[in-house]
Each structure stands twice: as C-alpha cells, then as structure tokens.
Length: 276
Image (cartoon, rainbow, N blue to C red; front, side, top):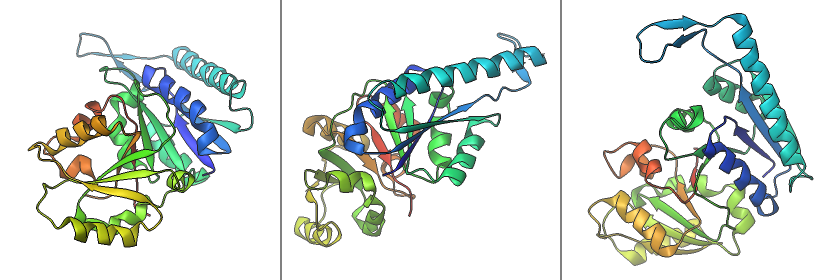
C-alpha cells in the first residue's frame, strides 16, 4: 500500500484518526500521506434559532480560509516531527465542498485507502455529520476509525457476509491483508442464521482464501447486527470488514441505517471495501 488520504476537520474523531494512522505506520508501510482540507464555506449561513440567513462578507470568508490553511500546516508539521519521518506528507487545500473535493482528489491522486474519523457525539464536525455520504461516494476502500479506537496490529478480522455472494470476496484482496496474511485469523460470519452445511461453506472458502487461516461463524441472535457486534466483542477482533455492493453487512442485515450500524460500533475500526 502506497498512499493514504485523510480529510481534516477539527473534531475529536479526526484527531483520533490521525493518531491511529501514526501508530499504524510501522505495520501498514505506506509511503505517502495526503491531508485534505476544504476551505469551502457557504456564502449563506443560517442564523441560530431563526429561519433567516446571514450573508458572510469577503473578509469573514478569507479569515476562515486562512484558519484552515494554518490548521493544515500545524497538523502536517506535527505528523512530520513524529513517527512519520519517513513518510511523504502532502496537503491539499480545496475551495470545493468536501465531498466534491474528495472525489476530485481520489481521481487525480489514486490513493489506496481513505481514512475517516468517527465520533458518537452528535454535531461533532463536518466529517462526522456527513460520514455516510463520504463513505458512499468514495471509489476506494474506506477505513472508519471511531474516536474510542486505539491502534492494534491487525490479527483478528471479522468479515460478515452472505454466503450466496462469495464472488464478492475478490474485494478482500486488498494490500492491507497481504501485509498480515501469515498472522491473520479471519472470522467469516454469516449474516444468516445457521441453516447451512458448514463443511460446504468451509470447502468453498478454502478455495477462495487459500492462504488465510479462517473460521466460519454464525449467530443465533434474532438481531443480526447485535449478533455481529457481540461476536466482535467476544473474540476481541481488531477490525470489522464490510464487502462491497448491496450485500455489505450494513445494508443487508437490518432495516436500520448504515449510520445506526457505525454508531453502535464505538471501539473497532470498520474497513468498507469497494468493488474492484
């Protein structure tokens, strides 16, 4: 893996994402980090507690841009002076709204991984409040790092999936896993209750995942999402992985939203893979 992209705001989730990637550097072995800061501010901002809007003048907008640039420089220097001395740190400043800036930068720079910080606190920051949109529009894998998560070397991975969609395992061939494959323990977790032939599932997975140590797991919990998170807690997994497409576990297992699923996972990073 060569390049990681992290968009910045001032929220605690983003700050923890920066700490996470700093701690992860020795194991992830990336060589370039791109920090993205959008200076976009709508010309019209709502006045608190009213239905009216306040038009921001040019000086106010310019002050906001200057503050964003200074913050980006500060973060860049802190990372460069820490454990990331051997990593090239580039920063990108865009006047586009963050979602559009993100799409543009991914197209131009082709990073391998997008990292987003997440907090359970409401109104915690732009990235937190727009997390689902940013995850959805990204064309590259997204690692969502909760504000309570601390980096641990990835050894135990939980992969919820529908065994009727085994072809989607192709997305699992991400460079992140090749780094750890000799030590990795993969818990392949069926999002359906145990109504299948375990041996048949294991045989299929042995062909698709020949180099990985895996187990096939199920839950008896009627609420599959709760069953997955309970299993993650019981096995003390280091990472939860979501396969791409309509069968990713956030969308498949419950009528509740992806927001609900991420919000209920406060301690473990979630890697959302994309179709290759």
